[in-house]
Image 1 (cartoon, protein in one colour):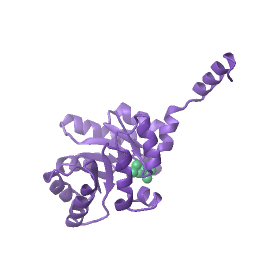
Image 2 (spheres, helix red, strand yellow):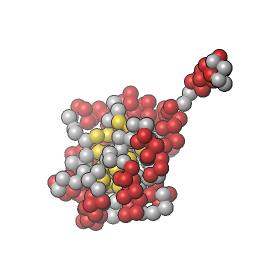
Image 3 (cartoon, protein in one colour):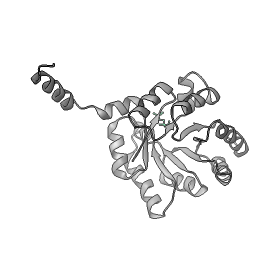
Length: 212
Ligand code: G3P
């Protein structure tokens, strides 16, 4: 399963790249704003530290606007993927951009029917949000499993990158469901590496060796 980083912070991204744990980067307007800029200023900084796919999100609502914005984003770097929130006009834009060879990711997906339409319109990736489903007491893992099943049953080539990850358990559930990848905040990535018994074991080994 691919590990993507859900971040617009080049310093965090560089750390994930160093660990071999950055198969791609997902940004969104909130993460870009948190990084103190916009796509035009932040995405170039990200592609400097990451040569894997970088998802940059459009803000336009109409198909023509999305296509126009997406083409500008694609000019930033060859590894930029145009990220578009799920909507009818977005599907029209995905179809048009994919016909021009521009990779796309449909985001803010919450069920298997949205996932099916995005794949059939030609999306390269989809980003189904598991955390925001569970935030409102809706099942997250089951929804992801259904999307994976639909894609596998019908041989759909779109890659499913599970997003809106709140903690390591959701990463495990995505992996068990057979998702192509997850996109993880840097803090969750660090959490995944840690366990109290590991820390205790290291401390004991160092103490026994007279190093602690
Ligand atoms: O970046 C897309 C997605 O991962 C956002 O997650 O935490 O804002 O629900 P979150």
